[in-house]
Image 1 (cartoon, helix red, strand yellow):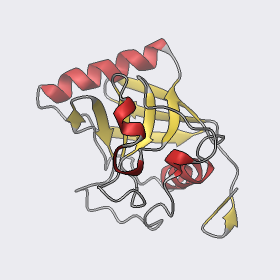
Image 2 (cartoon, one colour):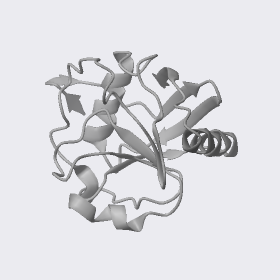
Image 3 (cartoon, one colour):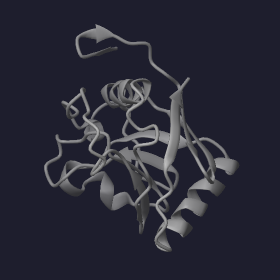
Image 4 (cartoon, helix red, strand yellow):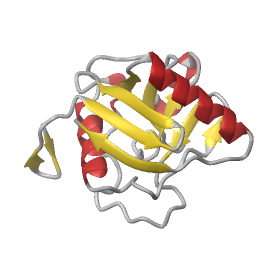
Length: 163
């Protein structure tokens, strides 16, 4: 796959390190190759490290660079892959790109579904699933983050890495 006119090697996993532990996601380039490439490049550039936190917890936990003041040299995603390739539903533990009401404006913002949210498969053009929570320990961290965000704490992401 290519991103920004150059070939990239496709990562298979994304690890999000927080003060409450690590969330390990299995990336799904079969479902969203452009999205996985975009997130991989953002992570490799260190854009999230120490600059992003989880700030939303209703039916998802969400993070990204919104309000951080960090410049994203990658711009916005060029396409919403919610309806192309292998289509994955927004079920518990899936990670999807957040966007405004316009479907092709996704960027560094993404969320992890806390429950089955099939309505997100179609709302506003659909929300593209690009990864899945890998293991029970990661689910425990996701649920802990959801709990503390509801209490007003916004856990920082200390580091993200792709493998």
